[in-house]
Length: 137
Length: 137
DNA sequence: TGATCTTTGCAATTGAGTTGCATTACAAAT
DNA sequence: ATTTGTAATGCAACTCAATTGCAAAGATCA
Ligand SMILES: [Mn+2]
Ligand SMILES: [Mn+2]
Ligand SMILES: [Zn+2]
Ligand SMILES: [Zn+2]
Image (cartoon, rainbow over all chains, first blue to last red; front, side, top):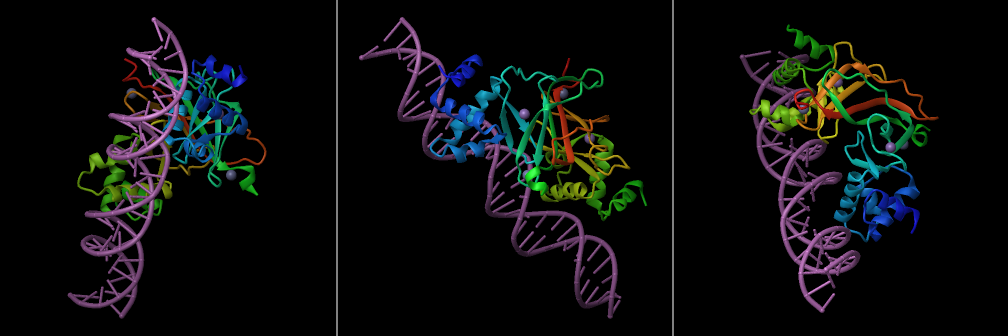
């Protein structure tokens, strides 16, 4: 059993061939990807399958979702011990408006905000927009 | 000249009747609204006009944009002296996944993050997701 | 094998966002 | 006041990411 197979099973995800390939791709590229990115990579697979794979990964806490200023939903692999809990497992992301790439900044956590009365937080989406190293020339 | 008329002119926005009405509505409701919200309120006006009004307001710094987990673009009036600069004029927003309302938390600023080399920030979108007072029962 | 459940593929739909273009309103110039 | 130019508005059509229904294929177990 491979490490990726174990990783799926530890999140209660049936390790099908398709899911293994997608997990492998995300682990290799180490980047924040969109459904379209998967479509470009897996030209043989159907869009719906890729879509539902991401959805399954998300629901089982294998990936976290990023809503950046592009309006396109993106996903990144969670760290091994991540439970996607707020605020500890939430971190900052960076969206480059030039190349439209999104980056994970796992070392940049978020403050433990003191919210107004009776607001109960459960998750966070913290995105800084700007120019990435490649585009800052 | 009304205070709202002055507010538009101070941002170099021609104060048309439509724009005045929309600004007035946003000032009255004091909430974060979407294009659809405007459509519901201004049933006589065309969707495109409302869309372009929000776009104009945004481009002239009269409103700021919020990208919450709903995937629907929302807008809120900026404070009088806001220049939408990062990080000083950026604040946290709260999205209730139950009623799908979004709230401004102007008193909750964002940290001055130490970004990795050559990442140049220009804006931020910080959203906490959870349950609002009305929905926390 | 046969029954059942899950996964995948295909097709169609939704809905927010956006654009082109014609029309109207407004404002400056004559 | 009339002309003329520019900006704003309205209408229609389009784009595209996201989503759903349903059928086909694959896996699991009795
Ligand atoms: Mn991340
Ligand atoms: Mn706000
Ligand atoms: Zn870039
Ligand atoms: Zn609520």
